[in-house]
Figure 1 (cartoon, rainbow, N blue to C red):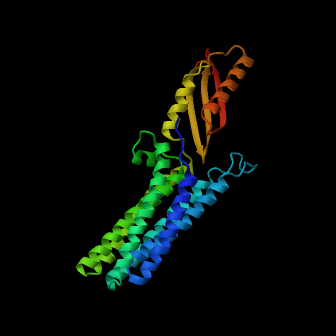
Figure 2 (cartoon, helix red, strand yellow):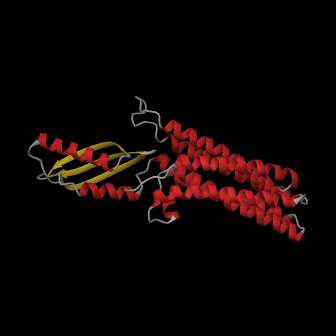
Length: 305
């Protein structure tokens, strides 16, 4: 059965790593005057804020259903995930591009560059630990699919965001290290400015990709195709069902709504057919605990579709 990764664990790993990295980067940016380092500091601080927003979203998503929200608040996490993608684009990406252009027009030599190199190496190690924890949770959900296929098909918005943030952070750190080393080796501060712009462009691209995926969930999307196929196979294998006519699923945060239109073998005895429908629903929820709501529209076997 398709599973889901532990998003909370991945978020806390990322939050701890980003806070430590942000402090170290901030000190190095102040000492060295590196634009790439300053851009990375802002990026890490923005990531810390983003992860707090995701935790807030997960908390709100657990609120029970009400008269105004009969299906609960599970989709609240999609709003906060989309907001995080926007913040990654604006605060992280746009600031980095602005800072890079400023440094390109007004280049300044690096001061005590070894600070920057030391902090970046530390940050790469810390971010690699966070990325490893995130990938462990992703692997629980993606099965045999590639990372790209999982990214496009996943319905765990918060895990998609954390994966995008960790990937952007790790690649950004490598860009920053390359920019600092090239500046030191050549004595030309233009490389620092180019590295800063490259970090900004990277953040913008990843933010846009994440926003596109989360937007689909925000509008309303079926479950992960792997889970959809498993539910369909389960229903087709039930003895009570003669033919599965239509299956509709809707992802509601970490819970799922299922609507089933099926032709039943038992059509003459109405009470027996209702009992069999109840049996199918109970078995479905037992097999797939993420299924919270199940709506069943039956047809008798002797009735034409």
